[in-house]
Length: 295
Image (cartoon, rainbow, N blue to C red):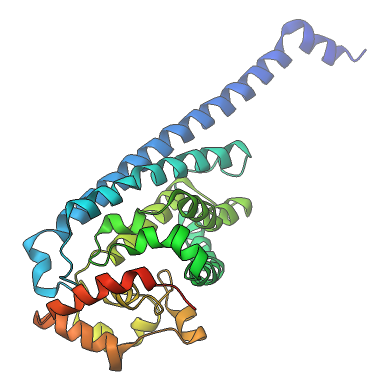
């Protein structure tokens, strides 16, 4: 036998080394679990903050949709949002068990991580989401799944995270693509992962906040082709078959479903900014919501 190997067994050095490795792995795993819970609390705080802002007087001057009025039935329907957050926590910890998010640096390389996440999101995620969203407006899928979300015409931030459980589970899988690819490439960081998750929530819930936070010049600038606005997404909740994209309208432009500036969107934005909202529109839309699918 090799004397050095024998010495390691006798002295216990090899067992100490294995113990240290296991202990280190366990520490990293439990730290990741704590991180996941902290992100959960941060997401809840962000959602509650956006809801408060959306219901505050600051939102009224640029309110987009005023009818139908948000009622207790809608609030109860949208109270399912914690289930989605729970699914996300389970999913992210499950991904960690595969080793993809193991032993990530905390901050070093975060800009690279964010860059990859945004690149994957802007291309793969946005494209798949558009196709999936269009499919959800086909009659059977719409009536059995997506109609739950579209029952809210006058939207709130909670609308953006309120879905039938099957649809919500599909989103958990789809929206994990960007962090997973970044982790698989070995460039993911704790800060990068947290930044993407919170940015995603801000964009999603902010898009449902139902008052226009962007200035008038945004609607006449090239930025409107890069990123969406609450007005842009409000068109989808009132016309149903337009503006399917997630956060980046390039898919709607590509497939010809974008409703844009010089026609309805600019008119809607102008009306919202001037506080001129036709109350009869909301009532009409409430009737049409049962027929929000493609034919």
